[in-house]
Amino acid sequence: MSETRDRLDQPREHRRSLRRRRGRDEDRFGVFAERFARFMGTARFLIWMTLFVVFWVVWNWAAPEQWQFDQYPYMYLTLILSLQASYAAPLILLAQNRQEQRDKVIAEQDRRANARAHADMEFLAREVASLRMTTGEMATRDFIRSELRGLRDDLEESGRSIAAPPVEGVAESAEQPES
Image (tube, rainbow, N blue to C red; front, side, top):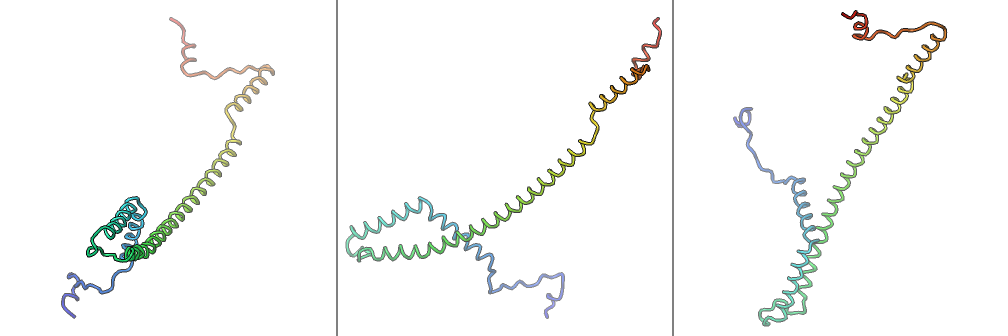
């Protein structure tokens, strides 16, 4: 072995492989197919194709015979359009398959997000129900006031009077003599 391969502080020699990486090239071709399919679905493509066919027909009809390149009645034009269609159809199908795969991934992500949202809603519904049950068992301020009024009324009927507890500041100023 060479000395540089045995040393860890030296980088290895980079050798190119004759094999190509599949994923990157397939993705690149898929992107090309999608762009091609998008272009074929535009008005610009239809205009260019129409101009091409019109030019072909006019040239082969009006040009001198030695300049005409389609001597038979548009046989080469038909061949070119068939060839273009034979390549366009698989590229369009490839683009549709890639879109379908993206749609499946998006649908799966949406399904997961919906499942999480559903679980969150169920958790919140349980929490709200437990809060309602807890507050149903708690004594409210109005309930306590009514109970205290009832006790005060009972004590007043029995002849005992209840003095209200002194409030700070109010009781002290009442007890001091005026000078």
